[in-house]
Amino acid sequence: MEHVTTTTKTIERPDIREDTSTTDNDTPKFFHYVKKDHILDSAVNGKYVVALCGETFPVTKQAKPGSPVCPDCERVYKGLRRK
Image 1 (cartoon, rainbow, N blue to C red):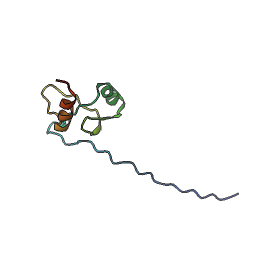
Image 2: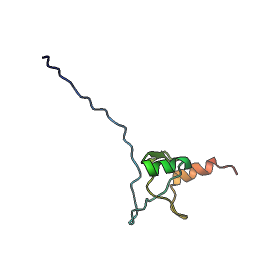
Image 3: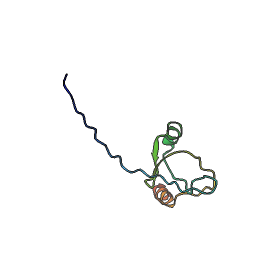
Image 4: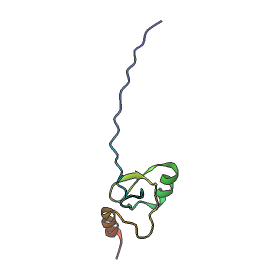
């Protein structure tokens, strides 16, 4: 019988950070603009979405009217809209 030695390599993944800063009641500090068709898939399957500002995160909360919006997302969104 032949002895076989195997080696295992570790593949490094890119560092993906989400905005985890929250208020006292576990609500995100800011809500981000993301594509509508990606929200449900993220909420159900946990897939990450990419916001207009470049942040990546899984959707876990729904913004209510008047919720604070990420200033970078707001700036990009206003630049996309036609006046």
